[in-house]
Image (cartoon, rainbow, N blue to C red):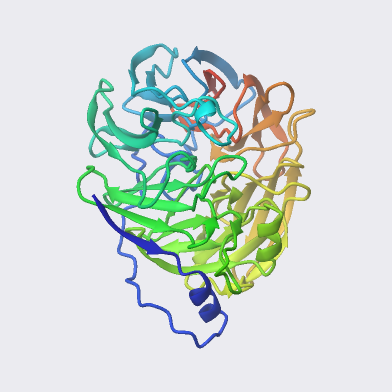
Length: 473
C-alpha cells in the first residue's frame, strides 16, 4: 500500500534559494484544499480550531469575572491530546488507547471506545510517556461524521489510524499508517492530525532521548482511508523530527507547512545536511516545494535546540512566523522562503528557553508561548516587515511556562504550568491589549504543552487522567 517516498529538498533547494546555480527538480504546485474543518456553531474539530492552526475561537459570550471550573472527568489514562468538540460532545483520547465522548455540560461519558493495548515504555529504547497510546490530537471529519485518531499499539508495535463514528464510537474503518521505511519502535506520533481537502496528514518525530534511526516523516492519505500512503522523509540523514503539538499547518492554497528538529550528519554529508528547517510541502505531502533554515542551523543541530518545537504560524499578507527552542522569532515570506538565512526579519521573542507548541494569530498580533516569561504578544508590521513585543505576561505565581494559546470569548487563553512532582496548571484568560490577567482558574495535573479548546461558552483542557471543563458564563 506504500506509493512512494519523496525526500525533502535539503541542500539543493536551500542553496538555490540563496542564489546557487544548482538545478532543482520540478515539483507540482499545491492544489487548493479546503482548510476550514471548523463548522459554524459550537464545534472545535481540530487542534487550535482549524487546519490552519489559527487558534481563533468564538467571540461570544464575552468572558467576565465569573469564569469557573464546572466539572472534571476521570478517564483511563493521561490525555496529551487537545480535547475536541463535535456533534454536541467533547472528544478526549488517552494514552491507554481509549477515545471518550463526554457530555459538555456534565462530563458524563456518552460513549467510550478502547482500540487496543498501548506500548509500555519498557518495550522502547527511550521516551518519557508510559504507556504510549494516543499522544497526538485527533481530527474530526465533519463531512464523514467521524473522528480520526492514530493509536500506537503493541503486538506488533505499530501506528494504526482509526475513523470512529461520532454518534456511538464504533469503528468505520482503520488501517496502518507507518510510513515507508519507518520503524514504529523509534517513531513517535506526537503532532496533531490535519484534515483538509479530502486528505489526512500525519507527522512523526522521535521519542525523548532521540534514540534509534528515526527520520522526520509526513504521511498523507485520502480521508476515507482508501488508496496508497504518500510518505515524505524530511531529510536523508537521521532525525529532523516533526513533533510540535500543532502538527502540519495547511494554508489556503493547500500547501502544508512543518518545522523540523535537530539532525545528525552521516559519512556522506557534505555541507548542509538538514534539520531545523521550515518546509513548505505540496497538498499531498509528496513533494517539498520550498525551505528555510537559520544561519546557525549547524549549532542548533549540535545542541539539540530544535526549531521544530513550534509549528509555523501563517500570517496575513503572505508572511510566516517561526521560532523554536532557541528564542529568536523569524518572519518568512510564504512565496519565497529564502533558503539558509533568507528570512525577511528576525528579532528577540522568547528569552531563556524558547517556545513550544503553536502561536495564535489574531489580525496583526501573534501570541507566542514562551517557556520563560509566559506569553508574548508580538505586533506584526506587514509592510516592513518586522515585529515588536507589545507585552509579556508572566502568568500564575510560580508558573511562567505558557502553553499553546487560543483567542476566544474576548480573551487570550493559555495554561500556565508550574513544575513540581507533576506539572500543575492554571488556565489564564489574558487581556489581548495589555496581557493583564482577567481570569485565573486552577486546574490540577496537566501534561506537557496543553492547549484549551473553546466551544459553547466553555473551555476544555487535557489533564493527567482527567479532562477539565471551565465555563466563562
